[in-house]
Image 1 (cartoon, helix red, strand yellow):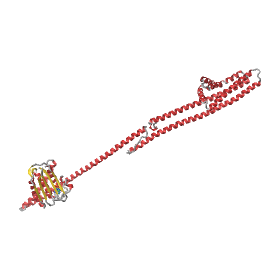
Image 2 (image 1 turned 45 degrees about the vertical axis):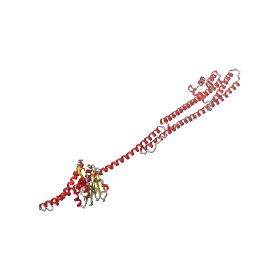
Image 3 (image 1 turned 90 degrees about the vertical axis):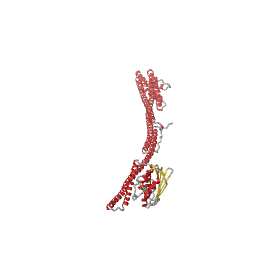
Image 4 (image 1 turned 180 degrees about the horizontal axis):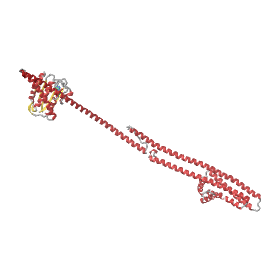
Length: 536
Ligand code: ADP
């Protein structure tokens, strides 16, 4: 069987209203029945009072006849008996198994009962004939009828005796005494009849009022109980749902909301629970997405920071370059200007003995300026994408020997021995640019070589040439070994060592333009070895 809370709310409300309607209908029927019974009892009491009034009238008329002996008075006596006789006939008919209602109605009409009261009275007598008050009343009524019948017979006898000429006054007096005795008995019976009916009607009123009270109490109790149960089951379900919704609103998605009924509230609980599950999933998805996005953003931020750092680094390098470049240019220019003054003075004074030496120094500064401007030109070409090589058939050994010879004086000045080991490597190379490679590597080896010997070797390979420049100087820290090939990168070279940080950058561009590669092996304090591979 379905449980009460599994009924839909509408079904619950209709059931409650239906039960209430049935109960109220029952209550109204009971009220109708009670009113009918009360009015029947009232009619019965009225009938009894008519009966006893007529019985008293009959006795009075008989007494009048006894003294007047007028036939009219006897007629009046007989007329007074018509009402009890009508009632008598109706009662006899009613006591039959299948009473003839026409006879009953005629009897009660003769008994002076109002036509509208006849049916309720008949129902009362037939339905409740077993009830002690009704039974007693009917018994008193029957006894009264019997006595009245006896009284009527005695009255007829008295009338007969009174009209007979030889009747002695004693006989008449006896008959009158007999009739008085009957009248006394009748008075007693009539009083019984009336008492019993009064008592019965009071009892009935109490019973009916109690029954009605009970019926009202039952209806109200059942109605209230059903209403309380229904509203409690509805409000309890709604409170659970409310509490769960508040939790969901606060972001707590772990408490399951179980439907404990199959009505609308159960359905609502189920939908809210599925909403909770959906929200939980989307929140979790959201959290994952937020985490991913945060990670992406932090990565981006890190990259940006990196870019920013690189840009800053570039700006720093540029500023540093400008300061170095101006310094680098100013140094030879100042020297040149001083030399020029000196030369001018010497020429004017005719002291030209040391002129050659002065001009050599002059040439050295001009060469240095030339080298600087070449580097700047190269880098401008590289940046503009206009850097190119011009291959021609040549022997790199010749180039190497040439360059070593050019560098040697400066190397020797710094106490640095240059050891060249060159095999002939003939091929298609840009000899000027390859010379520039060697110049740059050698210049660095001498500059950073701490006055130690520098070894230069040149050998052919299967594809072209391999050049190695090895010094025993201060070396390069690992973290700078790739950076030194970038432009303006001077690693940890101090300001006391001149340079723009472009030599290795240009060198690598030349090597790459030849389709070759350059690498360095170095240990800080143990010198550096630069290896260049160039295809022919
Ligand atoms: P620079 O004009 O500063 O010499 P380079 O591009 O020729 O510029 O060299 C870049 C940097 O590499 C130098 O500043 C120096 O710190 C380092 N370097 C290059 N060659 C050597 C070497 N042989 N020994 C030690 N450090 C070197």
